Every structure is written in structure tokens, then in C-alpha cells.
Length: 170
Image (cartoon, rainbow, N blue to C red; front, side):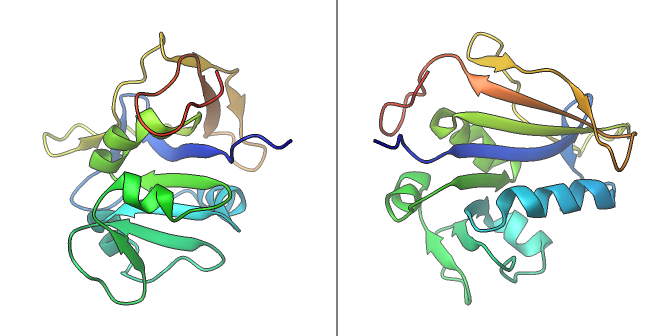
């Protein structure tokens, strides 16, 4: 019998947790974008309205795109809550941002797929990923990207169950 489908958050961040600035990702690494595409292709991606707007308000191809918003947006499935969105999903799901969605979604995730970029963003308006609690998340080994040695990646796996949704494996 197959277990529940993967639910994860995928994110690129600076060492100090910055994920965005002024409604945009404050860096560009082709290797990270290619990896993001490989990981999310053929899955459902869930994002907030600001992230939707930051990617040009167009669905990313080859994935079911869902936006968490109370608004009705053209060309994409919209839901008022993560729970409502998840109830409509089958198969692997990736939460792709922004900070508010990540904060809410962590309780629903089994895996955090984190790419670390070398950039340092010292700006009061910088948006950060929620703190990863080591009591809840077990950190895997840090690995370097083969196609861009400036980037590293770490997978975190849930140690204890989230507080929402169906019981998740631990």
C-alpha cells in the first residue's frame, strides 16, 4: 500500500533566511531555477498571491498551479485556505512561497528542500523564511550543486507530526 503523497516546501534563501526583497527574489542562479523546475515539474505547486504576481501572474508550465487568496484570479485555481487547496490535490505538492504561505504550510509539510545562496541581503524590508525548528526538523547533509558550486542544498525531514491535516509519517 502506498503512503501519503509528498508535501514539501521548496525555497532558496540566504544564510540568514532572506527569501525576497521588494516583491522579488533578490538573486538569480540558473542552476537553482533548473533544479526548482526538475523538482516541481509534474506536481502541484501552492503559492500566495504575491508570489503569483512575482512570477508574472502566469501558471508555471507542467504543474498544477494553486494560489491561496480570497480574490478570484484568471488562469489559476484559487482557494481561500491551505486546507481547502490541499483537499483538492492528489499527488506530490510543493509550497513555493511567499513567507506567509511558508509560515502556514510548515505544519502540513513532510520535507523542506532548501537551497542556500551566498548572497547577503542587509535590508530592513527583506522577507525571511520562518525559522526551522531543529526539534521538529532533522537536517540532512549539506550538498554542493554540481552545476554551480556557489549553491548548497539541504533536505530537512519532519521529526514530529504537524498540527494540521492528516497524520503524517514521522
